[in-house]
Image (tube, rainbow, N blue to C red; front, side):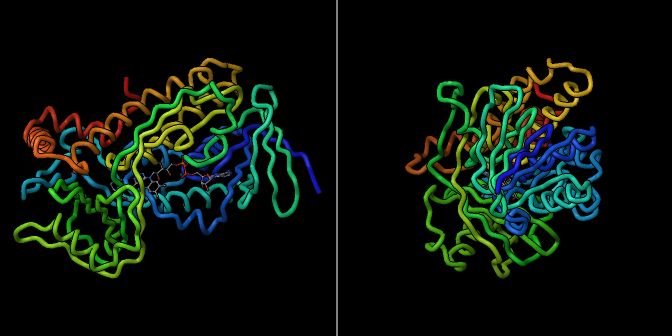
Length: 395
Ligand code: FAD
Ligand code: DHB
């Protein structure tokens, strides 16, 4: 069985980028089809990022999808930098007038899926063998298989929102994209534990044993991360070892980390990666499909949302007024924010992680930088304005 369908914008991937784009287009009366390789349960259960920038929350609010986020999201007006046996607060609100909100990525995705389904517009889960064709023509096509049927989706444009390991970026002919990448010789071991957070604020901790991060999801769920080897085997980390290491890095005189049952654990490698341009013919890449950052700056999800905000506005101008200029400038516009976030994420990562084989010289530089950020209003403001996110766009 095979059939041909038509839409204005074919969106590959139902992560934050694809789902936000679909809803922003819907609000402008633009038709789209979202194709997702995985099932709904899998996508809604995938635990990833947790920090939403001020601008991300405002956008979700303007889109009418922030009801639960406003109720359950945890506004944070600062965070702690820990090093040398002490904590130093970075006063995000005092320094920038803006704050961040802790709300799990999978909750954002759940809210967006509910909003998409409520519009009655198509969201296809378990779309198999998605492939892109005729990207340089005015009618690019997306082929896929669904429930045994071969479908050809004829589009005006295709949005590649299928993450770092998706198919869209690889559909661009060799030689078109420039790739800029850096791999880090460490990763993060992340856990979710059923215990009240031990601190009201996030703690980014430098320790001689390596980086640790105390975060949270709800008043009863703590999210914790440990620097580990980039190819660490999770089997090497029974729960006792994880707690022991977290205590060794995070505990201070008079303060100890609370423990609870670990309900999820996993290892993530760390990489910086950007392709330029974020467009080829009628294919526009957004989010992790075009770039990734190491998670230390909490930027990945926020960047994905920022990309599609630019893309949705450009597509709106094109459909409404026939104005091609914003769409032609999409890549250049999005890349300004991408590179700012790439630098910030690299900077936070190199300041806070112990490089394997690193010597005392490395440690002294890191500690000097941390002391500077903790004591200088200028340095703290620079960190804070990058962390809460630039509005509207970095120069
Ligand atoms: P994704 O969320 O990856 O969504 C892409 C979607 O496309 C997925 O649903 C995928 O199933 C689908 N897809 C893939 N291939 C195909 C295909 N061929 N056809 C159809 N659909 C396809 N960021 C932070 O800021 N902090 C963190 O702590 C953090 N932790 C992370 C942990 C992990 C394990 C990972 C992988 C990422 C983490 N990130 C973190 C990054 C952040 O989650 C991403 O930047 C964010 O998910 C990007 O959104 P996206 O929509 O671009 O891509
Ligand atoms: C979380 C993740 C991050 O990458 C970060 O920098 C802060 C918090 C989190 O998952 O809560």
